[in-house]
Image 1 (tube, one colour):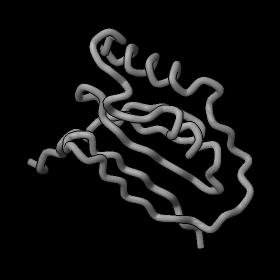
Image 2 (spheres, rainbow, N blue to C red):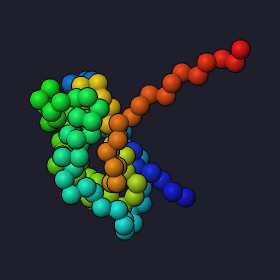
Image 3 (tube, one colour):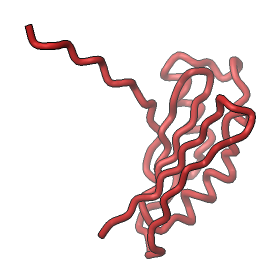
Image 4 (cartoon, rainbow, N blue to C red):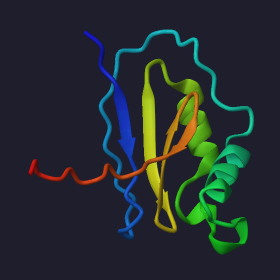
Length: 107
């Protein structure tokens, strides 16, 4: 049985809420990005959010995130929002979560 760790950061409220499902501890082949901060900033810029328009530390503690990803023994996915852009960070990537388009009924 594979259990996946999921951490969801809700930055809309004053308190940071974290939801976690823990996996058994096993060795991991994955490595976190050598410079996670740069990868997050570049991803935000590619999606139209200039680095001078937000304070990243208001949304996430990048050092703690990096340590979490580096110490994880299983799949970890962390989601947080910066100025309306929802990011999904894993041990292998930083991606923007795009909402699924609403499906239209068959006509």
